[in-house]
Image (cartoon, rainbow, N blue to C red; front, top):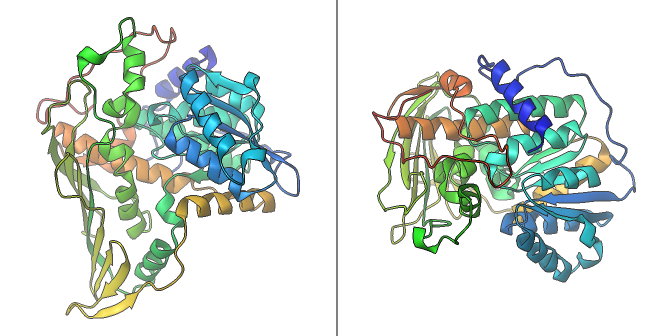
Length: 436
C-alpha cells in the first residue's frame, strides 16, 4: 500500500466514527465526467488484479463479453501466480488474440494493483477481500469502470470506505459490477421477481443454507517454508484469516446472505443473533467452520442462515421462503407451491451462465453509457454477512447500526511490505470476545 493509501485509510478511520446507518456516506466529492472509453467502438483495455482461479475466470468472461476488448495488464501478490494465469488465458479458446499482456505489464507485490489501474479502462478486482476496499477506492479515484468480486470488505471500516467509493463512482458516472453472480442468473431472477410481485404474499420467514466442505484448509505449521514472514504466510493461506477472507460466512456463504437481502428487496434488517464455533482443529488461522444466524426485520419477518465448512458432512445450498399465501423454493430448480404443496409456478425458461451474463451486461452498459452500478446493494449484502459473523464471534445481539458503526479494524496497515508485522489472532470465543 502506498503512503497515500495508508494516509487515506487513517483519515477515513478517523472521520468515520459515526457513519450513516444505510447505504450512503456523502463526502462532498465533486462530479467528474465519464471516462473517454465509455461507449462506441473504442477498444476497452482490461486490467486484472488478483490472478487466482476466480480472477482468471473473470478475465476470460470479460474478454468474451466484448470482442473489442484486450487484456493489457495483470497483477498478483505473487509473480508465479500472475504468470500461470497469463499462460491459461493465452491458451483459452476464442480470446487468446485479445490477451495482449507484455512482460512489462505482469506485476507482482502488495502494491502491484496501482500499476494495473494506471494501464487500463476497466479493472477486475479479484484479490482476497481484505485488500478490496483500498483497491476499489484507487480504481474509482482513477476513473476506471470496476468489476469487484464479493465480498467487498472484511470489516466494518472497510465497508464504510467502500461505501464512500460507491458514492464517488456514481458522481463519476462509472460502471460498478458486483461479483454476487446469482443476481444475473435467469432462473433466480424469475423466482425473485415472482416473490416481489406478491406471488407468495408477504414474506414472513426465510431459511438459507451454505453447507459445504472447507475451501482452502490451513496447512500444518511444519509445512511453512523457512524464512517466510507472517504476512506472506497469511496471504498464501488467506482463506483462513478473517482480516483477509472475512471467514467462510463472509467470503463464500455471502452468496446465500445475498439471497436473503434480495428476498427483502435489499431492506436492511434491524438486528441478528448467531451461534457458531470451530469444530475441526484449524492448525492456525482464526475463522469459524460453522455459524447459524437469525436476522430480524422491522416488520417482524425473520431470516435464518446455516453455514458450515466441514468435510464429510451433508452438503446443501438452498433457499426456502415462506409467505402468507405460499412458499418459494430455490434448490436445483425454482418453484412456488401453495400451503398444501401443490405446484403454483416452476421456472421453465432458458438456463444461462450467470458468470458470463454479468459481464455481458456490464460491458454492454459501458458501451451504451447507461452504466450498471451494483454498489449500494453489494455493500448491504457485505455488511449483512459481517453483521452475522460478529454476532456469532461475540455471542451478542448485533444491530444494523452497531455493525455499520463498529470500530473494529481487522485489516492491518501494510507499512513495510512483506516485513510488516501482523498479529496472529486467536479464534474468537463468544461471551469473551468483545464487540468493538
